[in-house]
Amino acid sequence: MESMGEHFVLWTEARAGDQYQYIVDGSKPVPDPVSRLLPEGVHGPTEIVDPQKFIWSDQQWLGLPLSRYMLYELHLGTFTPQGTFDAAVQKLPYLKQLGISVIELMPVAAFPGLHNWGYDGVSIYAVHAGYGGPEGLRRFVNAAHALGLGVVLDAVYNHLGNEGNYLRLFGPYFTDRHHTPWGEAINYDQTCCQGVRDYVIQNALYWIREYHLDGLRLDATDQIFDRSPQHVLAEIAARTRAVAAPRAIYLTAENDAQDARLVRSPERGGHGLDAAWNDDFHHSAFVAATGRSEAYHGDTAGTPQELISAARWGYLFQGQHHRWQRRRRGTPAFDLPAISFVHYLENHDQVANSPHGARLSELTSPGRLRALTALLLLSPATPLLFQGQESGAKTPFVFFADLHPDLLGDVTAGRHRFLSRFPSLATPATQAVLPPVGGDSFRRCRLTASDRDPRAVALHRDLLRLRRTDPAFRQQRSDSIHGAVLGPEAFVLRFFHAGGDRLLLVNLGRDLLLAPASEPLLAPPATDGWRILWGSEDVAYGGMGLPAVETEDGWHIPGHAAVVLCQADAA
Image (cartoon, rainbow, N blue to C red; front, side):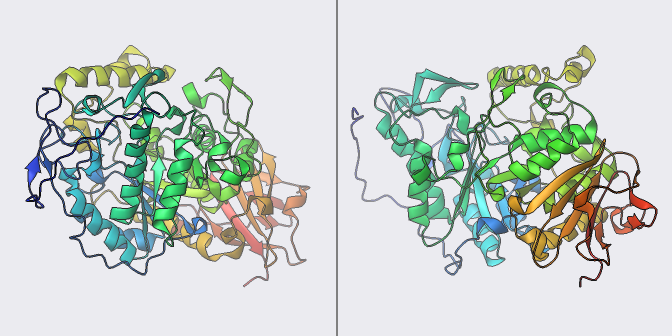
């Protein structure tokens, strides 16, 4: 590989708080590409930060095993009215009591303007000053660890934003040999790529080492192009684990191609990540909940068999032809453990891909949503909740950015073109009222203290406790469950366990009577039959009550409901 050379100045009088900029080849002053803090924004000077100044109190924290991960994705700027790390710290006890074990932060690297999802970041080492900067992030992580909560960060290594992106001044950071939906790809395998690879790999190490983070969620890894002998993702995995040891860290990927290689060990030809997001589960659950099978949801039908298969096997597409993508999607993943798939009913992308950033609670019935929540939180995959989901929030979540006016119009048009792929969002009337990208949309997305339904909180708290404490659900092994279709919108999952089996009945349609109940998975483990252990129609959750399921007349499975059964004589 060709070298990009080295240039440096030794400044012995530099102190924390001092500011500086670079002038490269006669350019205007620009910030350091490895700034830790940009107090005046991405166009302003770099401020020196002393990474040793903060006093950590988490020396005994060794991380959590993946089997204990219950993820909660949040956007720092809208999670609280103040939109700061310190304000978010005040809500950590609530998340702990809910049963969350790990917070997943959407990107916090510096971006242009005052508000942004974070995927337009341009200075990947700088913590956004408006959130509280580096010290704010350290306080947040330290406080989380004190409560026994982990923190992982969404890192974007597939592209950088346009406004404030000065990396081209410093070397061949981008290549036109590969292309992404956002333009040129980052140069991981072309001329002079070694310095670029080091820039990104060191960034991953930086988050783990300086901020004690428990791992990274790697955005859109299918848009990271690398034909090097060792893929950059594999190198990130190996080196971050070495830096973190003996602390356990967690590395997950968003990968639209559903390439199972990412999650396999290097010894088996993989990249060594821990898990990958599973859009197939989301798409099938969304169609089952809403009946809408549009655009990229169109290759799933939301059938009981799809939901059984997602719980059992993870990806639904493991190499079959995908009509929407017009190619084969996925690779065989039968060998992957259930916890290596991250399942969700909502995340930042999926909530925003509706006309007004509507939550699933506004797109389906309360009963269906409670039933699907039970499927999400009791299935063996690693579950993820999106901020406000657990409390029944009606606050929307749409795309927002605070960019230069010349760019904002293009971004808004691009966003509307993307949404127009949904036929229901492509009509002139709908296009005319799609939310703008600017500040008003950002303010509408802020969660408030009043946006909380205690019944929804109780539902999620009780399900997370059941997942955590019940031995049949706690084992999180897909090979211990089997499923069967019981009706047009109803199915059963049986969790086999030496200490007592569990049945999870899910009915997203009308009341169902099975007489006779000839499905062997319904057979009781003992002559005493089954009793209800938990039900989504409990009045405490806003339901209509829990009638008996197994009777002499047959099995009565309530509509828009989920029920957990255990052996009648079980404790």
